[in-house]
Length: 358
Image 1 (cartoon, rainbow, N blue to C red):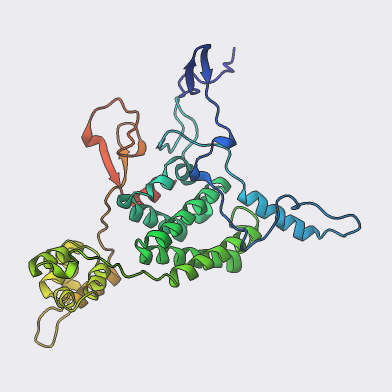
Image 2: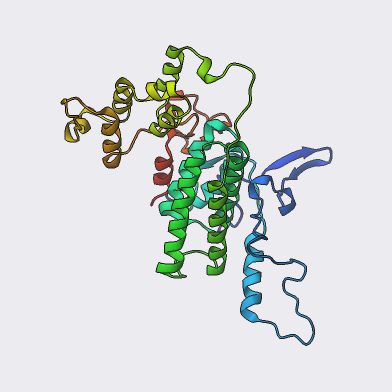
């Protein structure tokens, strides 16, 4: 006799104990958190929801216009589910216990990226991950994952506009996303992207609007009566420069004061930066010498950067448990029976993308 019920080996439903007994937990649309909030496209695609599909008597309804408004309305609706667990089981094939596989879009919906961007340790990690998705994985996202992607992206832009945190990284993200969307919607055709092409054209206009806002961003000068960076001793300012692993951060900090500019041009500083990001074998292939046969380490860094990827550093990353194949944020934890710290492996943004390539 065939077994028609739910597989007893699956995780099963979520239950809570009440005074009347056990009750199954069901999530509805009104329980959504801010992670699944819709994108506000009213400025670019003005439409009144109450009169969205209504026509006055005697007027002829324009079918393409009505369909376009309906697409915009469907694009702005919320997702139907919210996940309380901030981890996901990465499955690449079917087993006796589990059937199917995990996709990039599912991981994007399950992991709490909306809260992660509020943490400065994770902001650069999430922004870099979204940049890689924009470059190569945008067409693999489902409709729900696309909505979630642009909802979180809107929060990233808003955080930069409010807190002025790392606008350069977000500008690069929007530039890559704009180039990808323009190529897919104009040069390739409508069959590549999930959803109506009008929705993607509207999203492209939204991205262009975000880019204009970031280009017009003016960081106000902070007025402080206390100690400033220039009041610190020279060796302290020099140590701060040596702690930076991004060349552009060193150059930007060197523009703050004449003293920092002199410290930022130090040959030893750029030499250590080169040794941090690149190997000796890479040096031998791309030596850059000055007229006095000395190595120009600053020019050497930017020459090597064109040929080899730089080493990435993040305050906090996603982790993968090799014992139970679960991807999670370390401080959120995950349901694992093995108490083995060696089974936890930090996941870079590129490794995250590679986990979902089949």
